[in-house]
Length: 199
Image (cartoon, rainbow, N blue to C red; front, side, top):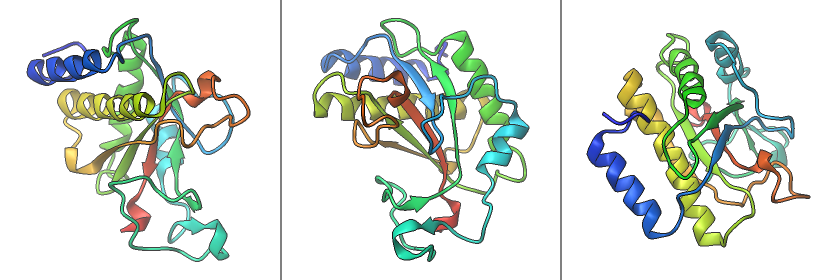
């Protein structure tokens, strides 16, 4: 088993895919909240649970006077107007690699513990990858997809988080945390979004 939690054949496939399109580089990944606050590090599982628990009976749709909207496809990009519980953490990868650093693995250990808690274990979560403005649109889209997939694979392979709970999705550069500066490191992130209220 590879250090980042992927199975050997999966790790080689992911790495080969990245090399093929020139994506292996130094990537810091952050799990993000819906504000421009910096990503948080060293969150304990209880803090993660509190932020991911639904606070109301359904998602808020800002453009529809806060009427809950159902039937949204959680496999793809979520509409911007839908407000769902999210968590922000910093997940780091090794230089020129898709392998998680020791700090990145520790952050995902806390996340896994939270996801396996009985308060969250029956819910579904989108793992949404985002990039900064470096590279072209296709490059950034693929990078965001690979980031989210690596996070999902690590949670599944190391901590036995059910794969059915996790939906990897890439957003590329389309949802920057800092739209005034697309190169801001805050834009490089992966959001963990509780999509259960949409079901």
